[in-house]
Length: 317
Length: 290
Ligand SMILES: Nc1ncnc2c1ncn2[C@@H]1O[C@H](COP(=O)(O)OP(=O)(O)O)[C@@H](O)[C@H]1O
Ligand SMILES: [Mg+2]
Image 1 (cartoon, each protein chain N blue to C red):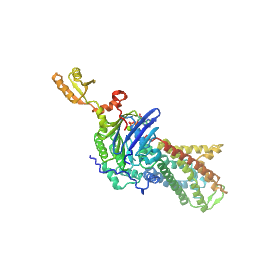
Image 2: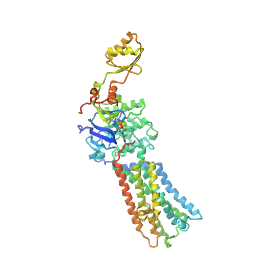
Image 3: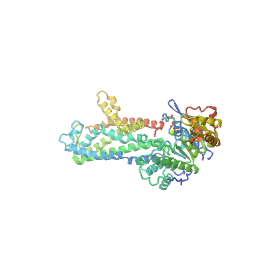
Image 4: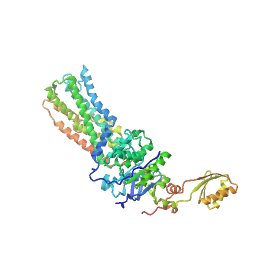
């Protein structure tokens, strides 16, 4: 049983009119994995997850969820699967607890103590008697996780769970997902944030306008990432750029200042050299992380994902 | 704030003796939601309160509303009141009663964005379709019973249990009159289920509660107009409003039930077509909202 893939999608395609929202997507998630589906807004992450939950029908391709398919098993395809799509929605006129109780009823029911337990897990104890209409966005998001946990899933599917949260909310949500992932659950997490996926996931599929542009482990991705870039502002950016190029750093002129990319020791040496040359350093800041830089290169519309230096789509397992 | 994951999710091993949730689970869920809804409770209250008030007001009026069937008999027999009310209600009140819950019950999920919440549990679209349909029909029949019961009781209590004059001028004894009045109201069950099905279809198709509620009333009104146009006899036969008048034959000297049988068949036809349309639409639809 455990050698059955949690998710096995092959050639999944969904079009809306002339727009191909998901274009021949193939991905495999093994049981126990913590898997990220990463892509900018509009990449097709939600469309893929809607197909997984049977909310929309693929136009082509096959999809097995814990070995089951929608065509063959109907709603049983979701046995052992829980999660939510975009922001979870509840009945605003009912309390948090009542919503959970009713949703559990659709799964055969859950005892009071089990509901207390999941409320505890997502830190909503004390607010469960308030109507959901009065909940903050973050509370609804956490209630969505609670509602999913009530199903005792083997596969937890979360579609950008930290989206729209404030920084504290993001931190808490990530901590919660990490804990759940640590408990042996298979997690399929979608995100537009490389840092989030890097922090939580082992493997990742990166999508851009419906198509896969990378597929493999985070570790392998990290190896392909460019060096860390720094932004520097000096009293003489012209000369600073010349010195940086001479030091074999990759230099980009910005509207204001320079971006230099290269190994840390070389950056350090450049800074010392600038001072020695009488050029004052006004500001030195890290730009996006190397993985983020790679993510932008892979997914930004003006880059060609087929360009040789970026053609890093990993082989399917 | 700290979040603690105290639960270790267990692999789902659905115990063989634990029954899979189905229509029953979905039905319980719908009924609880309906009971919590202010609108559904308000409509029941209106169905309970309005009849005695209308009956009392009519009874106090010098001039009976003689342009409607049984209008000029309202002071003579308590059984004329519920028949006058039935004739009035058939114009737009019954379609409205049928649509208030049914027109909203599917579209409300679109309004709240909760389709995805429902459909990612263990019940299928088919289960949810039947649960909602049965809830709406059951609720509408309850409202009908309350409304009809209140009207009949108010007529008997406020005006009295005098014999009723039949449509061909014959006298109908009190006991027979009560039975006929109850039967007359009962004949609206089939067309009300038809209107419920129409509202359910519109609720699924339009995904808009306001439209789902208002449209059946407007459609009922248009049907009334069409039915009153002379020369459209065949069309009239297939209108969902015609069965609402089929009870007239019960009050003739020699009662005739032909229109009732036709009305039953026409109502069943509308019900089946509307429910089939709603079901297929819900089954096929892409849930992309919410
Ligand atoms: N119901 C729909 N009708 C038309 N286009 C849609 C619909 N849903 C999604 N799309 C389009 O499909 C693409 C992928 O959307 P989505 O899966 O929501 O992306 P993501 O979740 O990665 O942000 C987008 O271009 C979006 O506009
Ligand atoms: Mg999305």
